[in-house]
Length: 130
Image 1 (cartoon, helix red, strand yellow):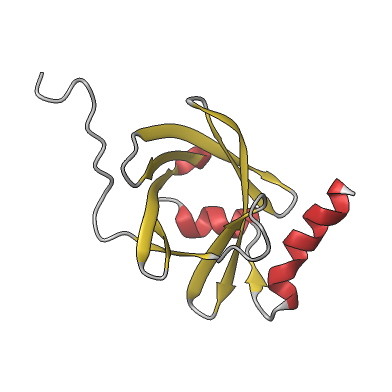
Image 2: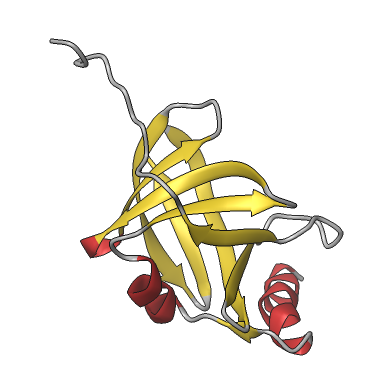
């Protein structure tokens, strides 16, 4: 049953005329960028992507978290040592725009727009000012 549900989520963007990004396409598109994730213009978080599939996540109002990502089929799955669990997403294109949705999201949850950030992440740490 779980496999059928994951397959449904992975094929949903393509069924709606959208172009699903493969993990390799996502890697080529995201590496070297800081990206904002938003819904209706409200940014919920940003991530900076580095070579070797390393990432720094900064949810709005939260701390910056080091992590990495890997492919699981057509999904991009994030792992953050400071956060429990595996966080898998699908990414797709609609023309020049890129959207994403977690596999764990409900069908009625809106997709998030993924756009280049206007500024790098602000990740103050305890060593600031030392």
